Image 1 (cartoon, helix red, strand yellow):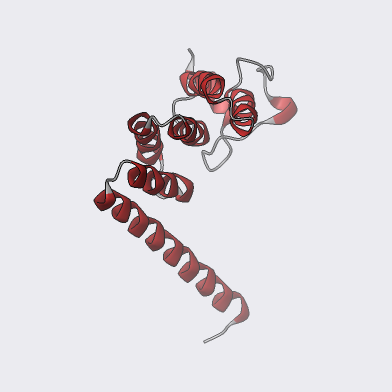
Image 2: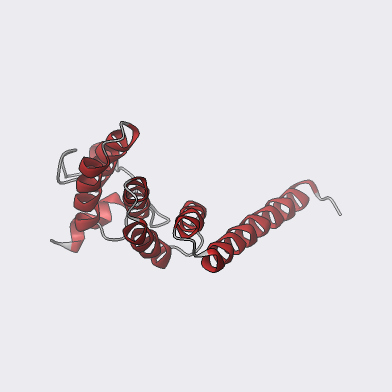
Length: 148
């Protein structure tokens, strides 16, 4: 698979986003966004095995697709395959250590595995990120409104 095609699905921040009409790929099995959406629909319908197939295809095309990795982990967790779920979430975490959804899902999955030490660690990481985001939001507010 050519890496050139993958760049079409990235926005300026490097996140996966549909490029709309400017995308040369069709919205079908060649598009990781479409595959993730189809998998998400099946996830809502509790068809976890078929959802996982779509998420795997999305990740095969775009290995750094955090949403597809997290969604696949959720599907595995619903099937009781907690080790597989944790692997998916850990792959997502490697790609973005500040992804709140990934940290939340890892905490939840570790609790399912009765790995309370790691569950607490991921919860602490999540809390730190939320605190930092709130600090940044307040600082931006102070700068914009010149509050001391």
